[in-house]
Length: 428
Image 1 (cartoon, rainbow, N blue to C red):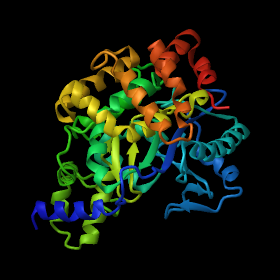
Image 2 (cartoon, one colour):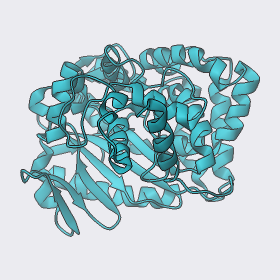
Image 3 (cartoon, rainbow, N blue to C red):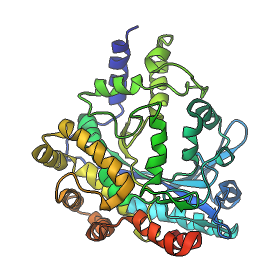
Image 4 (cartoon, rainbow, N blue to C red):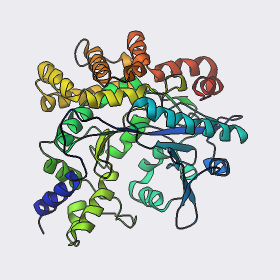
């Protein structure tokens, strides 16, 4: 079978996971908040498996790998899930109608996580990376697929054992898949500029504001445009599917590692459409673009933000929801200032590299651009009528000072070392 057949069939099934409706339909929200856990006495990565006995109390279910490894604790409003690194814990909220509803669920989980960590002499950090422990095999959670990805990607996989993102899912419609994915990937540098928070790594200044993004760029050496911004804007959903399929396939649906070939090569021996779709969803899960449409949830997943300081814990989620809600207005701004998303792409790829390194000290694509984006996000959240724009407040201050959390942390670490960083980033 030809590649075009696979693309058309997969695109049709992928599209069907999203609702059909009017553009003013209410958007629901979910959050996936990853946090580094460290030993209070040393600052080294702390093994989260010691926390399961505390977190299982009052749970509705516990998920285990076939080998018996506990990997998730489920509750009615949020789940605790193990991440790639043994020193990372993710809180995944159930969908909510407003940011306030989602944050209430997230904070309920955090109260329990912080208390469990305290019992074991550990701290939960509002930070985008393990500050002292470097990525390593010793820190990798022993899941089958993680070992398989280590085999395929080599050392480029190890940063995933220490990095912590603050991700949100926002519901979108079938008609919005392409334009919103393009706009939000183009604006990934805006999120990094305002929400970068990983400037100290492996116990030293990383020399960048987002070590999380910088380290992930290692996956680009042999797999160009697999992380952060895609190589270009997509012209159709079929184009998007085809571009994703052209990336090297890392894992089979069985989680077995694949050493050679892309998705098209793999599908030559797969005739069942259900199996083709399963293979595509497995494959595209390991293409880490900053904005990813998720057919299973009917959402756009926003991935560019580092985990945020506890006192400003809602800022990145609010910005990302605002970007999705304001996408149509933002596309008009991009058209007026840069000639459209496609023409703006190279300029924003360069801007991304600059904000990863310099944060809010980087030159903007044009004067006042970040202010205009924040204003559009605030207007879009105000239009929802739930007061969600209040969560953007820290971002106005960051923009005014031209300093994001990473820039602040770099100064704290310079003056007081790792202990000062831990005091500055602790969630409590």
